[in-house]
Length: 315
Image (cartoon, rainbow, N blue to C red; front, side, top):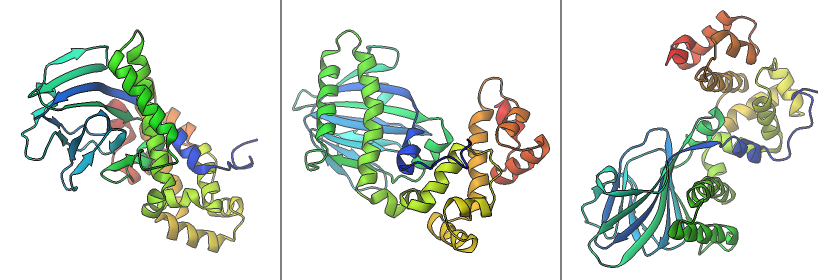
């Protein structure tokens, strides 16, 4: 039984989050004393996060109003934009890579900085999403996502997770690096879930809104599961239990592009990821996506991305 005939998922949004497989770029615990300022450089294709475990600070992201962060506040900066953390407005921040650091593991560091005043402790990190589905989701996120766990009565699990992470970061017992980095990955996904459950994501972006739609979400999940299936507008409409014309109109209105254009773009997103895998060939990727010839796939890829698949593979 293939994806086109399988019973569709009851949770298309959850299935989309399943693609959020991350690789950590760096994680750190920061022990600061006022006055202090930390400037984080741009990190393209990374999502950065900060958790305040003790004390308070300001988050300054260019183009966004400053945010006052308190214990158990969690903030995501999804697009790798450079920003600063400050003990108070006006403090001149020091660059992340200019601070002395203590290496607690291959990807885990401890930073200490400041003037000896009121202490603030944070756990920070940057993660990279390699999967096409993850990048598609992250691209639709706002510049800043802030989760106030103290005010959200439904996020008791998140407060517990933050307390556990804070304890592990402070004590750094044997295996502490592995625990903190894995907790950080879970924290990012749970924060995205909390943001989506507040309704901000589904109101903001057509693709996310479509995943919440019972009929369109079912179709999108099927396309994601089996991109090589010979999808047509007729088969997609049938899977949505809608007429061809009604489905076409609704998909374009909600998602923001025609259904078959979405199918092609999704295939090309996957192709770009697969072409970067060791040993990948253009012919193999074309076959995995259901193209009968390498030439047909290459034309579609270049039309969609503006680049030849061989160029992506060589890079």
